[in-house]
Length: 367
Ligand code: PHE
Image (tube, rainbow, N blue to C red):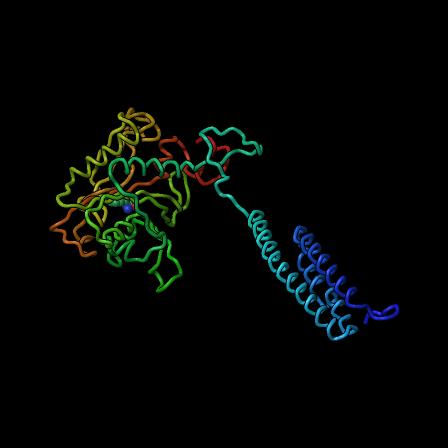
C-alpha cells in the first residue's frame, strides 16, 4: 500500500486521481499508437497491475461506503473508456503495421520492365530487362498462327508413356521410339513417366478433350537425352500444329505450311515438303523452307542446297484417331511440329545454338 502522509485521501482527491489517470492514460495510448512498436507496453502501463488506475483502486478502501460507491463508479467508467480506446487503437496500429510489412515485402515483378529493342540504361544505371530471343520467336509464331485462325494450347512437360508414345501409334518396343532419346522420371512404374521428347503428346490431350473441329498450335519446352552441340540442346522448344475437321486433305497441309512460311519469313521465302516417316502421321513429310540467309542461293548454313529443314508433318494416322475414340472415317486432319530454338538460330544466323543458353548478357541484348 502506498504510504500516506497523514490521513487517507478524501473523495475529492480520489475523484481527481481517477480524472488524471484517465487523461494521462488517453495521452499515453495516443502517443504510443503513433510510435511504432511501443503500443503493447503502453497498454500494460495504462491498464495493467502497476497502472495509475490500479493505484487509485487501492485508495478506495480509505473512503466511507458512499464515497467508495461514487469513486468506484467513476473508476469503472474510466477503466472502461481506456479499455475501449486501447482496443480501438490496437486495431489501428495492427493495420498500420500490416500495411508497412506489405510495403516492405512488396516485390513488383512488373518492375522488370521489358524495354525497347535497344534499351537505354535505366535511371538505376542497370540495363532494362527484355524477352529472350526464343521467347520473342515463340510469341511471333503464336501471333502468326493466331492471325491464321488457330487457337493456342499447352500441355504438361512431364508425360506418361501413353501420351508421348503409345497413343501416337508407338506401342511398347516400337522401333520408332528410338527416334527420341528419352529422359525418364523416377515416378510410378519404371519407364512409365518421362519428360516429353516433343510437343506431339499435346495432340493427344486435345483429341481426348474431343472438341472438334480442332485448329490449334501448341508451343512448349521439350527434353531429350542429347549432348549439347552447335545444333542440339537437351532442353529446347517446339511448336506443334493440329488441324482436325471433316474433309481435311494433304493439300490443306501444304497450303497452311506455305501460308505460314510467307507470313512469318516474308514473301521471298517458300516451303516444300519431302517424303519422310513419323509413326503418328501417314503420309509423313519433312518440311523445308528457302534458306532465309542466302534466300535460296546456297550458303554454309544450308550446305549449299538453298533449303533449310524446319520440321516434320503429315496427315494424322487413323490409328491415332482410333486410340482416342475418334472415327477416322468421319474426320481427317494434319499435324506438324518444328523447333523454335532452331528457327531462332536460323533467323538470327547463330553458328552455335548453345549461345542461347549461355546467359551472356552481351549476346542476349542484341536481340
Ligand atoms: N514430333 C515430331 C518430332 O519431334 C515432329 C512432328 C510433329 C512430325 C507432327 C509430324 C507431325 O520430330
